[in-house]
Image (cartoon, rainbow, N blue to C red):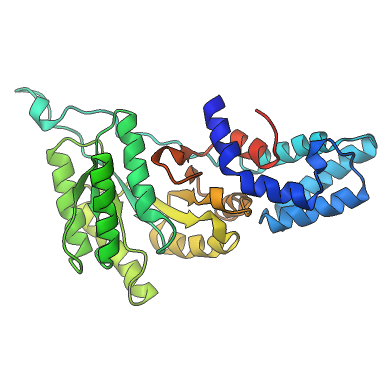
Length: 321
């Protein structure tokens, strides 16, 4: 737990630093006053916590301040973290299924065939970090003892397939890919068959983030889903939107569009280490109530971390564990 919290604290440094700068070190021990409350309000808006969350945090701090005029900044930070934990209740995505299964080579006579692989469709616009996140997710599953196959279904962009192949070589990932312009749904179908035959626990499908029109993109995603369901009527069991955390509140509208078209089951928020707008996580969850499974806190494979409400809430306010 300590190492996870440290990842959050290190990864959210820019957000913490920006809040500290705007509040002139309020959480370092400065006493609460009217000026500091105004500074905090500005800082929370700038960090993209949104009107509702910012209002709730300030109201609770003001209530505590009326009761105790000697209230210190660190106490205010603890109140803010408590409010965030309440707002984000239920936000942690819990991944089930995909447990280790014997490979085809290890199955003995009379042993039932492996279960169908659990399928995760990775969805999101270009630039969100979707392909990189796919590779990091496979790396994490492998480290946890699970077997994974990746389908390179962003056949619209040659760079996407090459990027995924590069990650596959670097991290020793199993991948099914085709040429640029190939039918993405056909790649997904073949990948599912391969994952089933090889006894894989998971199939992760990296999809396109842009086609000629938004309608074309949504239709391609729908086609991939239909084709996967020819193999398994419940697939894809997971439909995760990868959003760039540095976009702040703009990510909410993006998420709404994909959710309406594809029925999202989870979110992955990337690039939080490179932005001072780490509050966007709260706004996205508050608007859509879609669980957040992972957040990106750095460039290395191990910097993709399961979302923790407690670690996030304390880290953004610069608190210790």
